[in-house]
Image (cartoon, rainbow, N blue to C red):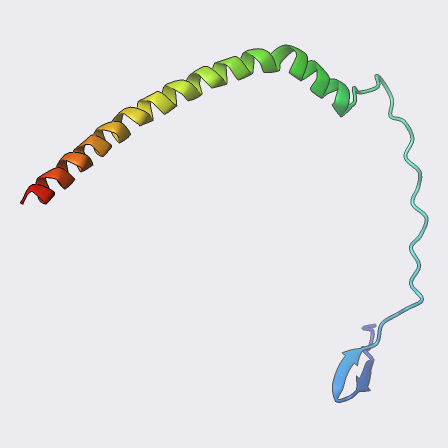
Length: 92
């Protein structure tokens, strides 16, 4: 059987009635799982930053510097070309 929706009418607004008697049931407590205890996120991050992050950072810094130098060369030549263009237009 379908429930019927009841409405409150106040100040010309038609709003559905709400059930204020709703109560959340108690959630079951979570116990420890079976097997080995997993490492906490703090322990995992500490291990990562002490061992792997140093070599990863050095590698990423080297690649970043190569990319910056590669991108800087065309920008420098573009700036030189713009200066030559401005000088040639100003000479007219």
